[in-house]
Length: 260
Ligand SMILES: Nc1ncnc2c1ncn2[C@@H]1O[C@H](COP(=O)(O)OP(=O)(O)OP(=O)(O)O)[C@@H](O)[C@H]1O
Image (cartoon, rainbow, N blue to C red):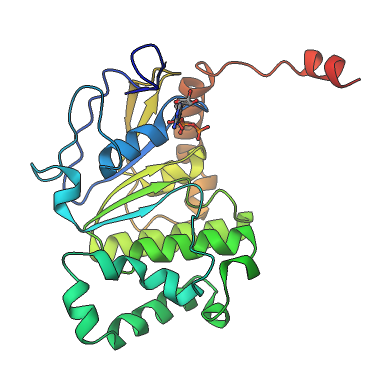
């Protein structure tokens, strides 16, 4: 994928990824390496300069039952929280007819999901009345409202405090174990990737390509306690070495000189 024409930024190159139905994949890598670009291609939001993304053998848009929660919540300011969450149902080929006929079961599901993420009292608020972390939770719920078969998540927990984030990890794990959607999660958090994923892929700096693939060996359901065990931290250290070796270093001394 290249942005801005033939001489523009080459964001991702030679990216080959096969995800099995029901698999949970996490993608980690240094900032700006092309992770979000890959998700946009898989979501069918833009065409690749070369190569293809296929979901069950078809172009991404044709599948119609994908849930997307990207980094910036992009909620519609004039709609309430509930109306924002219900938005995918207005366009989902699988659900829009049933939703128009009888919205009540969908509204009930939205209410349950919002309560589950601690937003039960905010259904009638507008996005500008919410904190950044609350908006991110609405964004996540919106991606789940139509019970997607395929879920694309781009740092969906990044604006949350550590405790809420951990709770939502467990909620997402429970949801995945129940409904078994296929998930691609982009994250900077190696603990999050290792807790949630079957397979963690490491991306190189831009132009991004996969440099390592790590199968996570732990049985589910995985607990937060697991993340503090030596076996788990061994995996984190291994991933950290692979990602850390790829990052462009931040030079603390130069930074201090520059600001002084
Ligand atoms: N719309 C765009 N137009 C031009 N260049 C872009 C655009 N979007 C992304 N890029 C460039 O493509 C490269 C990859 O960006 P991308 O957002 O995919 O990275 P990322 O790995 O998701 O980064 P981060 O982890 O910091 O969110 C970056 O160099 C970025 O500047």
